[in-house]
Length: 307
Image (cartoon, rainbow, N blue to C red; front, side, top):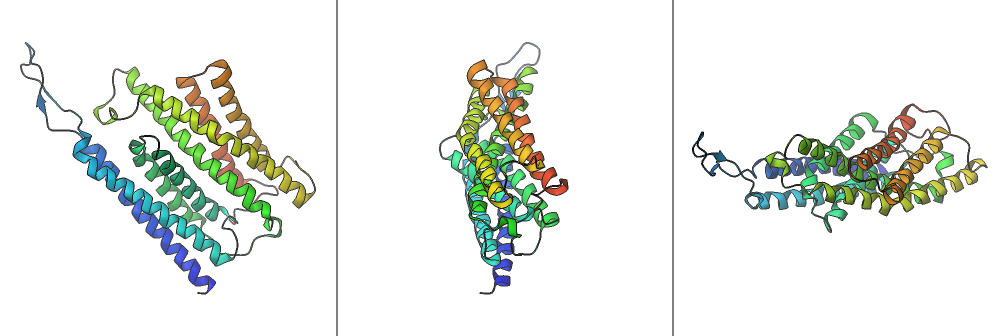
């Protein structure tokens, strides 16, 4: 096959993954919406007589939930194929511009969710994960797409594989942790007003969400540390200095400091709950700022967005 054929195959695989992730979104939406069981008679009261209430019964939508998870796995596999085919079409690793960063980032995010799903009951998060993956892929296809092309000279290094792969995996896990932290804040606000809405009663307790968000950050933080160090080593190899106050270098370090502060606050100060969730989201926002703003509109030696 020619390189252009591999490029077309990559595009078709990514379009197919978007279609499958859309089906996963609708299946998860059905699972959540139709878990409400028909009204049943509750204990009568003097004023209202028999009170009709709706209860949750997720056994009614168990099949839809399993189908949704199957769609998430299939979408991940198709996206994985799209990333691989993109690399084959350009005869290099597919991390040379923002389009390739985005599709690989969506792959890492969905992969982190599926990996965590094996140990934790996170199927409730599938609805939000599928939305975020679709937004990332839609933006990549509609706004960021660039044809396959050779790497710029500074990127032709083994360190591209080492540094960028570590950064992308870290980013996917960070985003999953931030999504869980955001869910914590939403449910916390809901409970502050009285109680959870019916559809949210299946979600884990606030303490479980708090612990899971922390464990994900603690698990991947050493990898992010390695990514920052590997980037410095690559900078010395490519430009003759370990640190040059380039915007991307600065923001990568800011992200490291923010997540280090989050872990420090959890372990030594004992931060839990709302304060920890806000700090986790703040740390994640520095990563997204570096990924979006610095890549697209920043200046410096790391401007490889291709835009």
